Image (cartoon, rainbow, N blue to C red):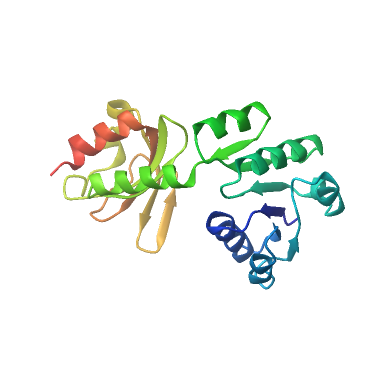
Length: 220
């Protein structure tokens, strides 16, 4: 069964989510109060609708409670974002992700029951900062305030060593969950897997442990 998504708010963030979900073949309803934005997504989303998400009758008429996941990506109108989230909760929507503008907004969203709260600008800033600091880090995904998944390029220091030789889990408390080698990906690599230079290691762990690994093993 294909999952059905609704994206409320078609600004830069909401629009990019709408496009990405549609490209993955998902059923997406795009909703905004701005008719021009809705028209822009008419050929992208499965359905594009002009509607005020702070009006409960509008959301009911769209059958919003039947969607697997609703993303509230309303721009600068914090009041509209909060009211929309509240109505979605009351209507019994299974999963709600909301874009927060600031920490105060996040606190209110948490209290009213948003399932996931995202700060796109802040999170992107952290990812970019992490990549700038380390030459070996290709990508960085924050799992929580203290844990991340990081893509690290293997250099000469790692070349020719097996995972068990490196003893990364015992020494650093982190795990290599996959190795990308050219077009191949080795998921859950065996302990005797030999790391080659330019392999991309997908590592999961606490930020402090990942940073120790980067500095000691990959430091210039």
